Length: 280
Ligand SMILES: C[S@@+](CC[C@H](N)C(=O)[O-])C[C@H]1O[C@@H](n2cnc3c(N)ncnc32)[C@H](O)[C@@H]1O
Image 1 (cartoon, rainbow, N blue to C red):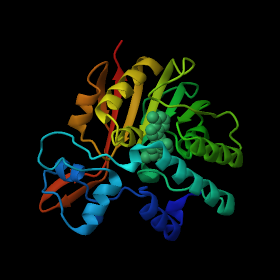
Image 2 (image 1 turned 120 degrees about the horizontal axis):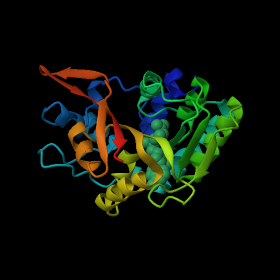
Image 3 (image 1 turned 60 degrees about the vertical axis):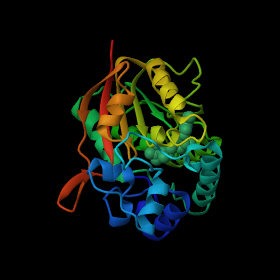
Image 4 (image 1 turned 45 degrees about the vertical axis):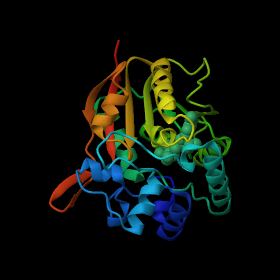
């Protein structure tokens, strides 16, 4: 595995608090977000810590059960990610640490295990939407996947992912700066699309998030081949909400198991991981 923050808890913890990243996805008391609480049908925890966690994860306004109503957040903007990956880039240059992985290593293992279980051919074209530091692509390459592309709208993220790719000697991974909400014509015909935290981030955009989510679904339809697979990992949306968001043009294939937490006798998940297939 590529070296990252989870292996260096001191730095990881500090960085996570500063930048809003999540490392390991095992739920802890302070990690309850309103979305997670809704998933577990629990009242939203109102402690200062929980509120901070909710803001960090971008949750908000869902506890009443009236549907998604995330408050806008810096996490939905490009300047936020540019600044975050500028910092990551400096750390990488100083220490060789690629930074934390959203939803932890287990989120990558879960995706790769599913692809392997389905016997998805290793030469299938794979697109990582909002690749960040590109570590998922490195792990896919190490598993044997050979046709890998990562995009991110943050040039700093792509610079970092290029450095990580260089260090790992994986020059065949394609990396490019692209806004997924306005994909270039060359971004098409993918057999697999993966999203880990990017739809979540887009959902927090202060400017017309609902319209941006709809555009995301249109972009996905345009880049993914008919019958291609879309694997999404989200901490802000429940399974039911994601089914609704992606109802046009996609059908659910599978929900991937994620860690469960128990609180007050109720059980819930802190992360949702689904596999969709694009309709013909
Ligand atoms: C929560 S981070 C996840 C990064 C990575 N997928 C991971 O799992 O570690 C969200 C990523 O989405 C990127 N992003 C947000 N909006 C985007 C857009 N419209 N087009 C492309 N990338 C976007 C951000 O720059 C950031 O790298």
